[in-house]
Length: 221
Image (cartoon, rainbow, N blue to C red):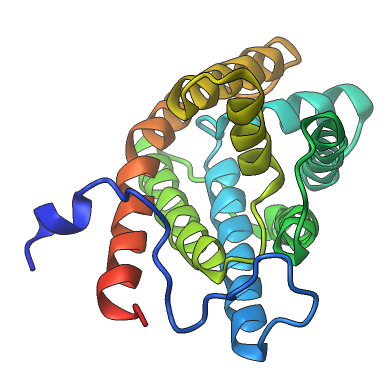
């Protein structure tokens, strides 16, 4: 299989041997839970690596950083606050959280909280850029694992699909509107929007696509 096939946009999340049959089950298999948890920790670690690079964050982390600056909080705590606020917004959208949804909000924020204080900030731009790319790859791998676990969407993903159902607007446009909106608000609050943000926007799609396609081709049931 060539690289082109792995880079092909994933039309759906593949079902793997660890995928839950019911996304809202309260008793998932042990293997499903383990890979979900690993995926969320890797995602949070990737986000922390990207933040520590110091040259721009993901749109949602730009928002979390802006909130953290204004409240005198850490980015990890602000990330958890953002997830909680987003989940409250699910109520009028009538979205249903799963175990993965709750763990997404807790574990990603907790991982950022633990790792960010001990991660280095590169002294050169080239090293910082390399660190951003590493962070994006880790986020892509983490996304692939937690999405294929099929235990409920993350708070931000559920908001995207919920707004699509309510408004009838395409998921691509809804996602673009949400990402740009939180980026602008976060930037206005003092969050870091720079080269790393643009690199993330360019690379995250292909990274997630590769991870989902690898899972679909190599671990599909």
